[in-house]
Length: 464
Length: 70
Image (cartoon, rainbow over all chains, first blue to last red):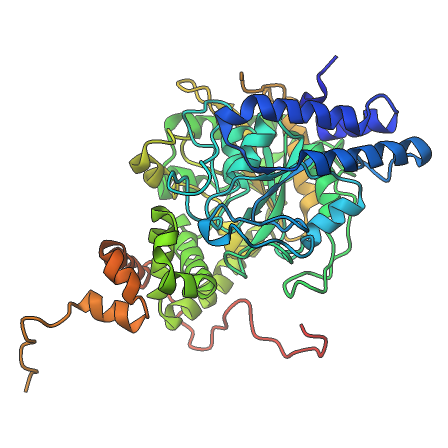
C-alpha cells in the first residue's frame, strides 16, 4: 500500500471519504516525512504541527459524523510564506518581516480552510518573492528534491521542494514572472498560473499589483484542478478580482486531445532564447506526443520573448518599488544582497517607462489574443535549462532569466507548467507550458491530463 | 556658453541620482549596487518597442470608480 505521504491529493481525499484513511494518519505521515527530509531540503520556514493536528482531529470527527465537506477536507496544504495565515508571521523569508503577524487569513486560505484543508507549514520563498536563492537571510534557501545540490526554482521554492519531496500533497505559490511555474518545472510538478483575477490576492504580500497571481502546485493535473476549484472565485476585497463564476475544473479531464488545435511557439526556445539541445528535444517530443494523441499542431509566432520580458520588468520594478521604497531608503542593508540588487533599479525607472510598458502591454495582449483566434491552446517552453547548482551564483544569475513564463504574466492568460522530460546528466525534471485564453483553465487541464496519461513522467519521483 | 567644468570634489552622477531618489543610505553603504541599478534601469528604456500611436492606451486602463470602493 502506498504510504499516505506519497498519495496524490485526489487519492488521499478519496480514501478519507471512504473512511479508509484518517486526516490524522495522513498528517502524521506527512509530518514524519517533513522531519526526515527538512534538514536536506530547507522547504519550511515555520512548522505548525500542534495547530495542524488539532485541525486534523476536528476533520476526522466531522467526517466520521457527517462525511467530508469536499475533496480537500483533511488534506494538508503548504503555504508560501508571503501568504497570510491568521495568528502567524508572514515573514516573506526576510529579516524585514520577521515580526509581522497576520491578523486574518488571506482570502485564498480562508476558502481552503472553509473546504477543510489543513495548514501544517509556511514554506520557503525567495525574499519577497524576488530575491533568491540567497544564503544571507534568516532562513536557508530551499533545495531541489531531485538533487539537493541544485536549486528548486523560485520564487515559490519551498512549495516546489515540499510537494516534489512528497512532504505535502499540495501547496500554494505565487507567480509574478513565473514563480509558480519555475519551481513546478524544476521539481517535476504541475503548477498553474491562473487567469489574472481568477484567484484573490487579498492577504498575499504583493510584488507587483498588475502581474501577481496565486496558483496551485501539485503532483498531478487532477490535483491541480481540484485545488483550483476551491481557490478560485470572485473576491470584492481584491480590486483586481474578476467577476467570474467558479467552475468544476476537473470536468473535462477524461476528454482527451482529439480535435484540439495547439499552436507551438517554437521561436521562444529556438530563436529568442535558445534552449539546451536536451530541453529543445523534450519539447519536440512533447509536441509529437500531443499530436499522436489527437491534437492538431501548428507553429505560432508571437512577439519576441525579449519584448515580453522587458515589459514585465518595466512594470514589475516600479510596482515593487512603490511597495519597497521606504525599506530601500531606510534599511537597504536588511535585504539579502541579491534582493537589494534586484529591487534597487525600481527607484530609477521613470514614470514614462512604466506607462510606455503598460501601453506596449496592450499590444502584446492583442498579439496573443490574435493567436487564440487560430488555435485553442499554445505549447511553449518553460525554462530553457535544467536547474543549475544552487551554490553557483553566476550560473543562477545566467539561467534565471532564460525562460518563457513572463509573457503570460504580462498578458494575464492562464499558463500551466508540467513535466516533459528528465535531464540525462543530473536526473533533473524538464518542464513545458500549456497556455490558453483567459478563463480556459478547464481546457488547459484537459490537454495536460491527456499528455500526463500518455507520457512516462507521471509515476516518477525523486530518490530521497 | 557651456557650463564651467565641475570642481574636482563634485559628487559623481550616480551620487546625485542616488541622492535625488532618496537613496543616500544605500549609496553610502552599497554604492556598487546603486550604480548597477542606475545602469540597469537605463537599459530598460530601449529594451522594448514603444507604441507608435500617440493615443495608444495603457493596460490596465483607468476606469471610473463604481462607488463600491473598486
